[in-house]
Amino acid sequence: MAEVERVWPDPLDGDELTVQTRFLDFLRATAVRKVTGLTREQAAATPLPSSPRTSALGVLKHLTAVERWWLVIEAGGSDEPSLWQGSPDPSWDLTAEDDVAGVVAAYRAERERVAAALAGLTPEDRTRRSGDYTVRWVLAHVVQETARHVGHLDALRELADGSVGE
Image (cartoon, rainbow, N blue to C red; front, side):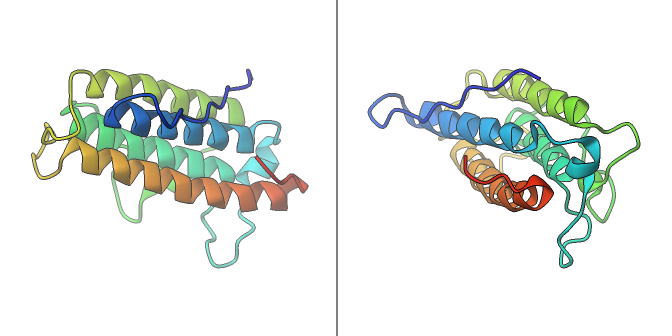
């Protein structure tokens, strides 16, 4: 699996949408780094007693579902199917086929859908699906949700193999 370059956004370059998207790209790359090098067993482990469905692969599957719903469907108005069908949220659940390479590939593919969905939108535009949000709000929500889950990936990686840091 190729290393994803993490680039810290330039504080003096880019409009609002560009800056938020660059922060999201940085967080996406960090999330992928956190699972790169783990075995399927390590990445599927659920070592947090208070969150028995939370695994590193589950976090990435959930982040894929977050981007699909909020950025592709809600903001972009796409008719792609939601990955959140059912309750409790099934995006955390793993199948026998889920492995690190496949889950990372799906996460990366969603990024392409997001880019297409956001093309031509501005931060103050209303979302194309419901119109209940601005693109600004949706993107900020996805950035904060991704950052929160990257923190979970930090802990899961450390518990899996002792790796810490970026």
